[in-house]
Length: 210
Image (cartoon, rainbow, N blue to C red; front, side, top):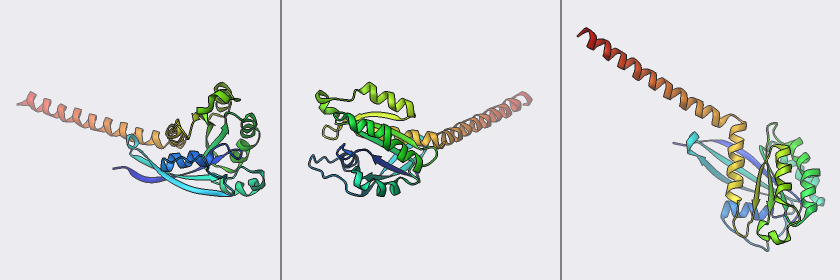
């Protein structure tokens, strides 16, 4: 049985038009609409991920925040107590990549949890012919801040599930949730093995004295 006892707040940030809303819609509803309007304030969605190997499930509370400069001050309120911050840029727009490095990362980092997990996302990778930000550049920045890196395409449904899976996995590891469960499992195995050895020892002793 999986324990449904972990809730994790996720915020997606980045400039307007990079595809944050589309990423969430594709992930939560497996839906894509290229005419999706830009978010003006914030929207909330959720999805549960099961980690059966750890006997854990995580409820991801996913917040889509506005990227327009007009709403930036308001958006800060939604970063509070966030455990995962996903920084999204459009691979065709160099300025959107510079924004996550020079603005969005620090904004979220100062408001989120102390051991916050980050993801760096190069969205619209299906339009690679128009690429202005290389994959290596994205990976380099992700490595600098210790983040998960993923190229995604909402239209082609590329990398979306992997993005959230990797971030959730890292969240569990950074909070020792996976380690604790694995240690408990190993302790139980050791205990069971010890009991078997003791029982075998007892049986051997009986045979010797029979």
